[in-house]
Length: 430
View (cartoon, rainbow, N blue to C red):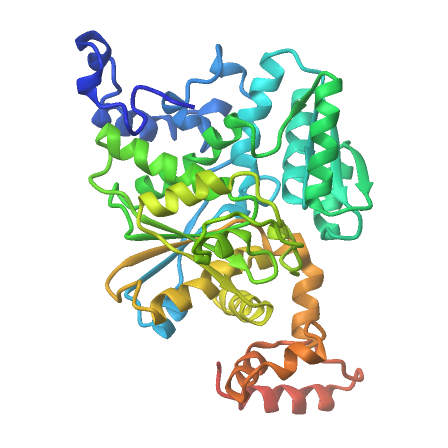
């Protein structure tokens, strides 16, 4: 979506009357803060509170909302210290109503679908999109269809779409195969497509950028690190920061870097390919939310990375698991796909691309309970294959061992319990 305040539209290109109608940054800051005190659902939404910068509805008061957004910005002091950074923060989008960042885009796109009179909506999903779409469709009184790859989705996510009443269809293919079927389907039936190619999704997904700036008193961090799956999120956040800069709400834009799993890394390969040819891959990673081999929004994401001076990195399954446990050790859980941000940040710091004094914000896209089986397997030391264990150095193996907290099974004998507890209390904390 392009507005008068979009990057590339300078006030000198507008008529005097049009330029005079551009939103005033000071007035916007005051208005957005004032709305936080309102009892109206639209104002309590951390997405629709910023509706002035995405006027996509004829009547914004009819927006479909579950009071999404307003997610916390946590500090990560232990991980900051380990990396030698002064400031490390995590914007936890997993604290949205259905547990992922997808709610921010779904509230905007689903609202457009209802306003336009659609009865059916549909998406292909690795899990989080399906949960968000099903919830918002139920809220709006619309009917929803979810296409998911059979056996390649965390059950916690699948349970959400079923609970919210979606017609759930498992196809014997991968995510990209689901997208192909759905694309054909919407050409034949009046079904509104709600995958990330929908431009209204990006309008909602840009609002965490506004929240981050507001939460930091309009002082922009130097670096934003985003997980890379279908790649719309990084494009949306970049759009948000660029629009804020053009409006005069902020005086600079952050670097945005994208991190992909090594087993689902088409954008990383594109950046490292001297011919710059996008080659889809057969995605294979336990981080199911980013198990996408042919991302729909790669061009937008690549453009944002290059425009804002960022990088694209890849991380292994072992690095993802370690980073997830390290985030969890700070009392802030996240799903595996979110943890690629910390794993990738380590590489950016080691390469000198992030300086100690720079403020870094990790975007955590999903809640830890989205994939509880992954967490349980990790702490029981049942996550890695023998081949993956063999790739760990002794130092890396020791790091994992120190973070694992498997349950202890004891007989119901008080003396046995006391001896065990005393042994653990004598250990030095990690």
